[in-house]
Image (cartoon, rainbow, N blue to C red; front, side, top):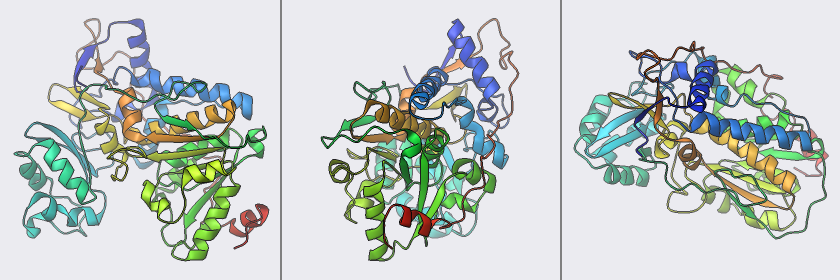
Length: 440
């Protein structure tokens, strides 16, 4: 069944999902600016709640019992930043659903350099591409250029240039699921033959968080709340972009973590990073594989050599396969997985960059699950794959409900309170390196 379709609410489970969606705040930011808020894909609410249930069980066993309002996570950035529903433009404003000759494309242009590539991608005049320093993207030009092109051709050319462009996936498709003894989650979890690690509570484990923006930091945030010591490692010259604001969002995701800053333009910085990773119990990273491999950081080798117990990699399209080096952001990755909603006019974005928080939640779930199972694991979390596992037709009010929306009140999005201010860049570098016996 195509993802960009609608299905009337028919069961008690559907009604519970629609009510939870309306109460979470995610519904308020789903749909068109001039239209009503829309229901969720039929598998989304239940899928997120299953992950939250596993987190609750595993965190109680390993550390601090943690209850997660999984669906509300989709609206945290919107709550803090005052974002609203505005399809066919994303809540954040940098991505748009564009109709091509044979389907729909999500085109993400959040960076000035993306706009500079429009002439090369679309064959348009440089003047028509607009000023890269201007926040306004010439979407009318982009839409006109893509209107006569096939999705696959346009997307493949965009990937060659390093642009985040995805074709709307139709149908749920096959989604990888972690093998026993792990819970059935939409990840690729690979056991690594290596010496067994001594069983320890989460409070005695160190998590090195190399990620940035949303999915990876959320994973680290949930592990921190469950009791782990989480160390955020950043480059002194290219720190986490979310430090640029809103500050409260950075605090929610990173409060309670310690901060290490390394000069990764220097060989010594990479030497120290390799030592840190070898000393960690868990590593979270969101880099395209070749970015670390070309610096001698090969995840399977580190894990096999009695390094981290669990290595969590969160990327747009997975560590393996043809999409391993594709650029992705939360909105276009969601569309690549078919995680959209629909009204009579066509597909709309589902909440705000839904693949980001969904992947962060699933990554934390898989990590806790792997730690509880024991052994050593590589966990490959593809944002598009997580999105595909949650996709489905849009739940729409049935004949017992008004045609313009659900009976349930639609709450505004909300965000959790930060447990502490986010750490200043490098605030704990000397302390952390000394405590782990790593010399700068």
